[in-house]
Amino acid sequence: MRKNHRLRWAAIPIAASLALVLAGCSQAQLHGYLPGFIEGEPAVTNQTERISGLWTTSWIVLMIVGLITWGLIIWAVVVYRRRKGQTGLPVQLRYNMPIEIFYTVVPLILVVGFFAFTARDQAEIEARFDEPEVKIQVIGKQWAWDFNYVNEDVYSAGIQGQPDVDGPAGSLVQSEIPTLVLPVGQKVELALDARDVIHSFWVVDFLYKKDMIPGKTNYMSIIPERIGTYDGKCAELCGENHSLMLFKVEVVSEADYESYIDSLRAAGNDGQLGLDYARNQNLPGTTAPTEQEGN
Image 1 (tube, rainbow, N blue to C red):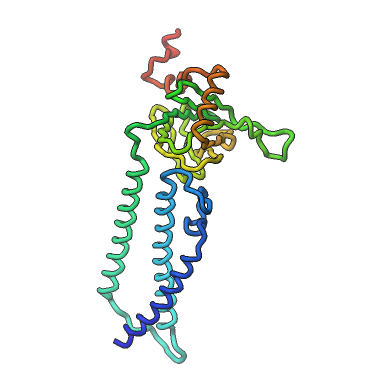
Image 2: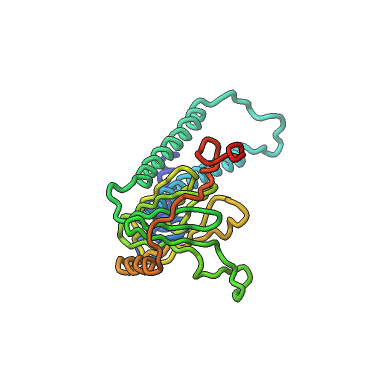
C-alpha cells in the first residue's frame, strides 16, 4: 500500500510537467515539425491535419514505450548490479509469468492499435469525391510533368528543370518549372498516370504522395485550403535526371484560377495531352508492330 501511495504521488508531478510542456508547444512542435503548418493559418489541404495527427500520435506513443523500456533497463542494471564482495552467479529464475504475459499483450495491443488508426485514416484519405468540382490529369514522364485540366479541356506541358546559368551553382530557372494550379476551397480530383516508368507524385506540404504506375491510374482527392505556392517533386528514382523532375503547386483564388485557364486557352493549349507515347504500347501482346511483322 505504501509503495502504491508513493507511485501515485510521483505520477502527479510527472503528469503536471507533461501538461505544461505540451501547453507551451508551438504549432510546429505540436505537428511534429512537419511542413505545411503556419501559426494562425489553416492547413494546406483538408487531409494535412489528419496525416499529421497520425504521425505525431504514433511518435508520442512510441516515445512513451521507449522511455518505459529504457527506464526498466536502467532500473534492472542499478538494482541487480553485482555488489562489492559478491561472487558467483545471481539466483537463476526459469520464467516470470506476469512479465511474459505483459511483454506479449502490450506489443499486441500496440500493433492492433496502430493498424486500426492507420486503416481508419487511410480509408478517409483514399476516399474519392462523388462529385469533384475540379478534375485534373497529372502525367509523369522522364523527367517532367504534363497537366490536363479536364473540365476546361486545356493543358499545360512541362519540361524538366533547366539550369540557371546566371544564378548560383546548381540553381534552376524557376519560371520554367512545371506548375499545377489549383483553386482554393474546391474539391479536386487528381488522376495520376505515367508514360514510361514508375514515378511518384509528391507535394511536400501536402504530407502525402502517391505512385504513378504505367498502365494504371491512381487518384488523389484533396481540398486545397490555403493560398500559396508549394514545392513538388518525383519521389521515385526514375532515371538519370530524376533530381530535375520538379514541379510547383499554386493554390489560388477561384478568379485567379479562371484567369489561368483563360491564359492556357489563349496560348493555344486546347484539348488534352494523351498517353500516345507511353512505352506500354511496345510491350509484347500489344498492337504495336513487331520486328517479325516488319520483315
